[in-house]
Length: 184
Image (cartoon, rainbow, N blue to C red; front, side, top):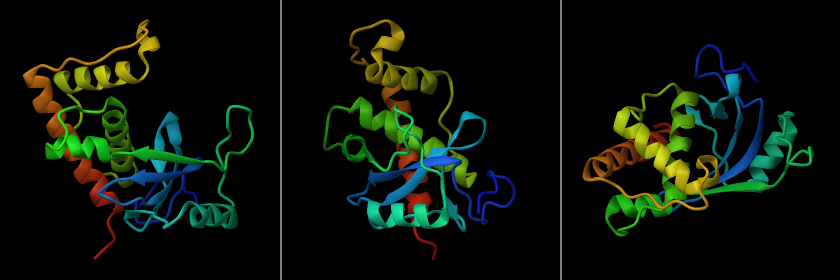
């Protein structure tokens, strides 16, 4: 089943080891298998040309165990059956204008997840550039300020950065929506 992400993306592939992950997105909560791919990248399980999606964490875990896919280890080195949750709804609310504040956690997680979706499906995702890189760094610093030697960090955005954030996160929504949609 695992072809190490080589060859035709229509062939089912899975991460080397992964986590059952619930994604709160577009008012729904699909469940995906997400984890380590080749070369220290993260990937999602794909079947056909779409992200493999389950309706519940239990259904996903049952499939994972039935197919013999490897569970990622927790901090103690034990295979983890815990469900990872990613909530992109606050970032989507900001994009819709129903929130004046971009939640840095939701924004960064949605951006990074879109990177993984686009890499898994070999889709285009224009998410880099000088201003975009600065925005990504600010979101990262807000989430893990100690990596920058800070106790806390609240991003202050320039008008140019806000335009780029809206563009990149808008494209992230498109990438994720495309990846999670059912084939027609």
